[in-house]
Length: 218
Length: 218
DNA sequence: ATACGTTTCAAACATACGTTTGGCTGATAG
DNA sequence: CTATCAGCCAAACGTATGTTTGAAACGTAT
Image 1 (spheres, rainbow over the protein chains, first blue to last red):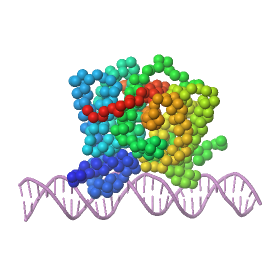
Image 2: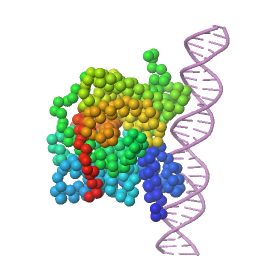
Image 3: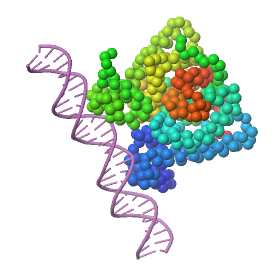
Image 4: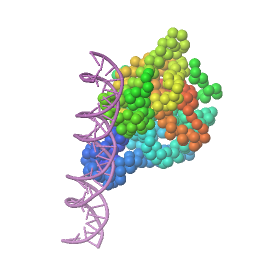
């Protein structure tokens, strides 16, 4: 690492620690001491801990959503058809590829997203929805083209289900790896899991919608 | 069951607050003041905050896993075939039906599970895996019978994906409801979402396994 | 070289937390 | 009646947290 500035050293360290232990469980002292900067630097440069959290997400999501927008432009221009595989494939390749120099970065990205969604009360969800709902809606529009037989409302929920599968699995990968290693004696990388995810999600998204609600009582 | 004693009042309140705000963000003072008991009561009856968390989960999961075991016995005895719909249906009906007197209880159950899985460092995951992995493995065995063409390793991950979809969606339901209400002007109950989940999960679990790994590069 | 705005630093501050303490209450048994 | 003991209570304890402070160090333009 080439002697980065204080701000970036804080962001780099906070990113990793937040993903590892959560927001509340990560103290500013833990961040600053590991980053090799003074404790007061966080409040000096960011104003508060909450602002730090927001800054971490902004640094992560802004390039991602811009790249996603560009990829969707590209897809529309070159006439690639809207299929679930194509649309989801773009997202996954992007999530895995935005930081090729650091393969662990993708895992951090997902763990952070998971932490963000677990935080029920915070304004973080609001912030994320405000800043990135546009790209999200665009993605959903493409998916709708891909599966026109699925009603929009149904698709909305299926996208949520997919989000859950992705974030939950990849954010809990560390622990799941130890389980799967014990049961199947095999490793699993982020890229590996992503490959398994795609057919699962595609199968779920384009599943037939039952026209009669299922009975929940026996 | 006598009148709600101190222990149960603490468990009832902690359950709700933990689900709402997370473990670290919920202080013992918040729990005890809302429960109308003395602060010291938690340490007196449970020993520590971590033991309280564990007790909350035990009260929730033990009846659930027992009921699930019974339902699986019943299924095996009556010769109901192993299909994804049947196996998942049992789990969902149980999760929604174990506390019919309080329909919000199911939501709390899922939110708590989500909180548990988000907590990366804690011994909570270990505890859950130790005490409830048997039922879990039994479930997975039945699913394997239902989709014999899916390799065990693949099925393992697909179950994780399904878990993620369920927990993530239902634990974030409050905020998602406001979104879906805004975009589609419609409410969504836990039972409603569960109905939508089933075909999605079935579609994902029994999706064909590609024999050639997908290319992640361009 | 001096002056000035920015960044860094050790130290302190106020607050919130989980936990512990020692005495009080009230029911129960001898 | 009194001895007992689990349950309850207000208060205090030690610690960790986010934040603030005021001075020192630094870089840069004058």
